[in-house]
Figure 1 (cartoon, rainbow, N blue to C red):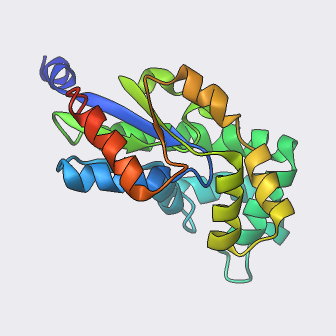
Figure 2: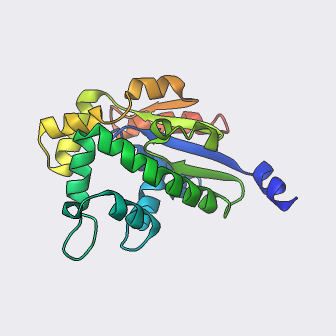
Length: 203
């Protein structure tokens, strides 16, 4: 069947890590360097959360009006802050959004043949390991990640620590990965690791 033929030709590589580890930069580099299609789950979710889209409708029925602007849009900054500090809310939101995001991800993957990169920030947290053929974890030390989050998001150290605490331990993710790239140091050092990885024909 055509579907089976397409699946045999496909190789889906899941790229994940933790907030501040640099997974998006690594994913973008690999996509450009090796001319590979890249699907970004954050981008898909942003579309799902636009007013009247499936994700927005799910959250609108779940959350109080304080989570939305007067124009009806999701107040993303407030929403994000609450997710980092309220584990019960996070579980509710995950249960509502993950199936929608996964459905859209699979739909996008089917558009391509050959190797496809999929950046999935919460790959392990969502339990999507079986959705990809191999997993590349972008690692960075806690100290480096905290500093990156503070600089990037203009937040306090405590807020950065809360963001890290809301996700699964990055060392646990690295231990469960097929491939690990340490992005704690310079970008040049990271690129050397990616080149070594490419030499194994993973891409």
